[in-house]
Length: 269
Ligand SMILES: Nc1ncnc2c1ncn2[C@@H]1O[C@H](COP(=O)(O)OP(=O)(O)OP(=O)(O)O)[C@@H](O)[C@H]1O
Ligand SMILES: [Mg+2]
Image (cartoon, rainbow, N blue to C red; front, side, top):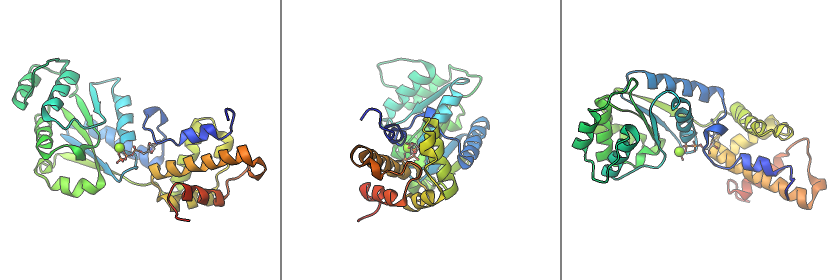
């Protein structure tokens, strides 16, 4: 149905990372500001960690969008796990150096000596838990040389192990943790997301009781919340087509939220 009231809200909660969809929430803004401050400091490496779905990729993407207007910034969403491939990509993306031959670490260092930037080039590495420790060691050495600054994101579960590793022992790095949302902020997240897509009436359908229930189902995790709300609007869409008289357009009932939780596998019926 083309003109369904719930098509757009459903799309709002697709699990995609796009800086234009970034929502400002107090806790996230504070973290984003400290991330931006850290990037300006003479720190060697910045570590962004947190549970899956807490917004690490989103924040990294936002940082990329904001900083790339003023300085050299590279972002790798998916890890280039092959070391020579990684170095060749860095040479290409930072120094605009194109080659078909292999670039090993020594060669890369020679190359980087030929270039000077007013602001140290920034490289943003998402999903850094997937890099080998040998490659992480090279990344650490490059950071130490202060020729490149890295911001890396890690799944929280890997954090303990990774920090114990040698390449993180220099301590001249900053670590920033992203957390699940509080109940109050989750309500703001849901409403702001809908309002950003001009779904004002739909945003007003949610009250505190709804957001409390949503928070208890998703633990305030943004990815889980997306999944739950996508199901919710999917169900409302179905009612709109088949039993429109059953829809309350003023208010979302917790019963429908529970149905959505069952449909998306959070609750077992
Ligand atoms: N500040 C935000 N504004 C808008 N949407 C957000 C924000 N933070 C997170 N999201 C939403 O939550 C979803 C999950 O966030 P994201 O993919 O960044 O998590 P992650 O921490 O990178 O997870 P993983 O560890 O699995 O990679 C995103 O698809 C996005 O829709
Ligand atoms: Mg991610």
